[in-house]
Length: 228
Image 1 (cartoon, rainbow, N blue to C red):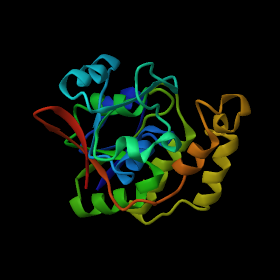
Image 2: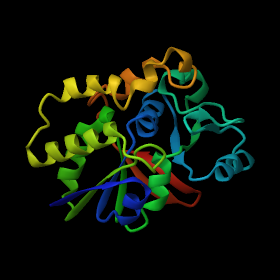
Image 3: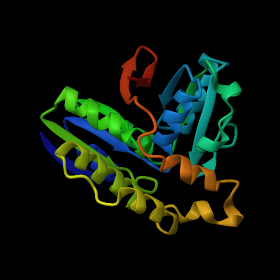
Image 4: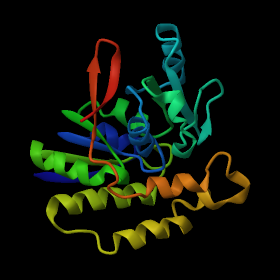
């Protein structure tokens, strides 16, 4: 199994084989929590226009979206897992658009298969990849808005690669906690808790919490992140 790590939007375009599109803070942690809290289905959308177009097709759908971390005006929820109201999303179709994670999905056109990547289900991701046993694995770190490296995504890629190769990342939990003064420091800014609440940080580094993966498929209505 050939495992390569790619970076940002350009990296997504280069991904081959089975691509794991990684966005720890917060897109693909968010999607796992949405399913765990009762969503019927989650559909990634690349653009804001595509997101709002779903309201015409399904007035009952829930729109979840951010740009620059801030909830898109008119969406029901931002990209904050701690803001999820289970009563709001239970049994509902979720349309999800973000600055980085969902952009990686729509740009990974050369990949044979796409799954999402985060710490909350990293162990399940590695187990799925071992079962599928693809010739090539592309770990794509989406970073900040797909344009700048983010250490949490790099660490997640190293962690998944370590699980696959048997070379575990040393002191992974200490490195995760250390993100509070690095890639996750914005979650501890008291002036910005409305956009980046501290609880989101802890929810997103809660390693191997879920035993499912999200595989991107396409059906008659578009892309869907299918819980496997």
